[in-house]
Length: 198
Image (cartoon, rainbow, N blue to C red):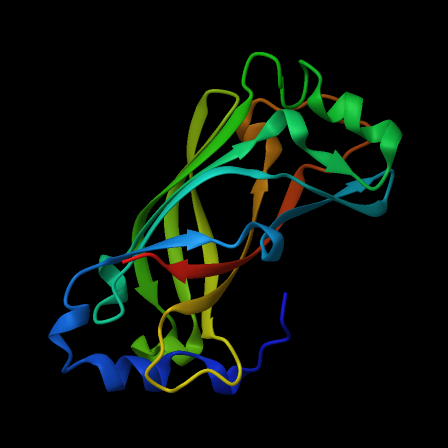
């Protein structure tokens, strides 16, 4: 993903577009697959490890006049998840953890978007949603930062970048296998490039 800086955050863009009726409703964006990654971290025997899980589908609706009116619906492919430790992949997909054969996908649907401290997009946003893992649905909170590409025109909203971070307790979803080796908390770090399609 292209290196982004805080000065590219959409605070100024939102101010520029408030008067634009062309952006009065949510617009559909699609992922740029080669610039998108869903990474996760976990501790194995006290050592930090990481992996990635591909996105199977994504429905992204962003209202740049009112970010609170935006919506995200994403499905991840569990069966194609991988880790940097090859021997950890099979246990991760096993019945006692992700149960990939029975539950081949993970589903996230946003339920609300809240602007960051002071109600300013420059302070990021919080996306609340429902995460379904192993058939269990639980609420999750993700911190979001939204940017436009460096060097793009000030009024161009066609290409955007998103970073989402958060964490979950795997036991909440019944993914409790290998509890003596793997820590409870799983970290999430999602980076996505998106392009407007309408």
